[in-house]
Image 1 (cartoon, one colour):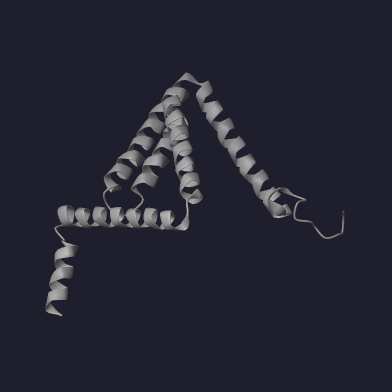
Image 2 (cartoon, rainbow, N blue to C red):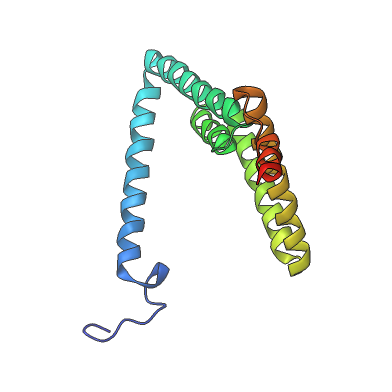
Length: 156
């Protein structure tokens, strides 16, 4: 095999580069776990870590919840905050696993549907997001895009 062409199945992910990247990821995770274990070994460190994780997770979740009605990554931030909490709290790990399972199940179901059904799902999602953006702008900033569009169409 040395000196010869590399076949697609020789290394995980199809090449030597992905194996190196996996080792780096694995090394990084190992360092993080080791550091967290060292902090948890000290009673003061354990309490400090729990408080720190609780506060950082709460800030991320709060910002995410505030952004849910606005265009932006609201739900993504809520899930990221859950991920932060999951470092220290078992209930957050369970909730994150539940969320992951349901999102994956929804994705599998949606991708197994016929093209017309996926088109309808996409259209309903687009209408939902549009209504959320319209209501958010209307009630938080006082900008009514529908009224402005109708006024524009009436004058032109």
